[in-house]
Image (tube, rainbow, N blue to C red; front, top):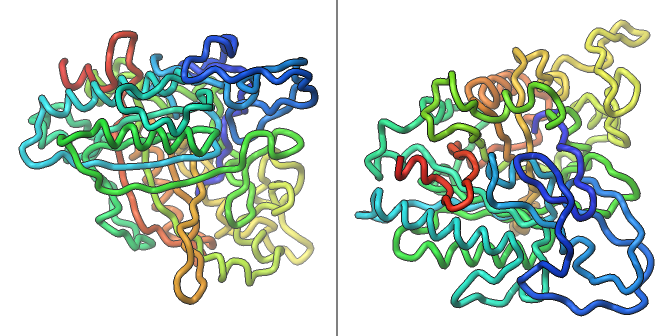
Length: 432
């Protein structure tokens, strides 16, 4: 739950490719199912993907797909989709294990099938033969599907020599209470969309395309605030009510690619990882009953930021730099030494930075009414040993927030670069 912000929201009708936003094709080009225009429609049309979205005036007789449903992310590109786009309203994370006897050949066929169905769905088309029609009436709705490889995948496919050093298992942390059955996996899939039915449709289609090559290991569901739910673009809040993501690296920053993506050359990573990234996935349970017993002032001391607007306790607005040395009239530090926002600052962690695209989750209540809720923490970096690991080690040594959260599942996956036209994701590894 590092103190970093989400990339800026896309404008309505934007298309993401390699982190660059372009104008979307007209809604008439959408192919899953054209919706009938509604004569005389006026007012506001909701914007597109991202944790914060603005509004634009809708034209008369607007096709409903010119709003949220029309927004489309591109499957092919320099990077896989689902990394640089803004937060999506609905998400599914899943890990699969290859079955006994499935190896290199079966894995290649599986990634070929998965890529084909992902490309169709992201374009707003039906999944193919046997489509369930769950998303029949919807446009692409910013759907993204992202694929990655876990540590054990390489041994099972005879590709140990191609396994990146950066994929070595994460170290143990004292705050971990990990369920091994819900951690790691041979293959990882992230699905995000701004419509819940579109996201579920993609999850079901991916599962059906798995066939007999792999079995589900674990699957988790998440959500974020819907695009356009706030009066102006703003950083999303988590289930603790805090603005979560204030200091995320942004694609406009000159060193963004170097922090988040594996370079094409001059790196310890194998060639097939060029333009890819490493993702750390953590299921972080929030102990909400304990947290909500704290006063707002006490919560702000734990985080180091004001709850209302996300500004540092040292003053200013949300994006104002934190003054780590500022003291109050009693000589005490305004931002406590163990405040979460202080500990996670990149400039106090050797420049370690991660691009966070999390989802909140709520999986019901226990018999005593305690919520099983929290954050599906998803962070991207060019090297987890320089990104996630040093920050988590520092949090492990004295983060005030640690009393109110519990890390219950974990995974690290190598996510290759985007597939070029005519390629499937991972082809350069599996056929290189």
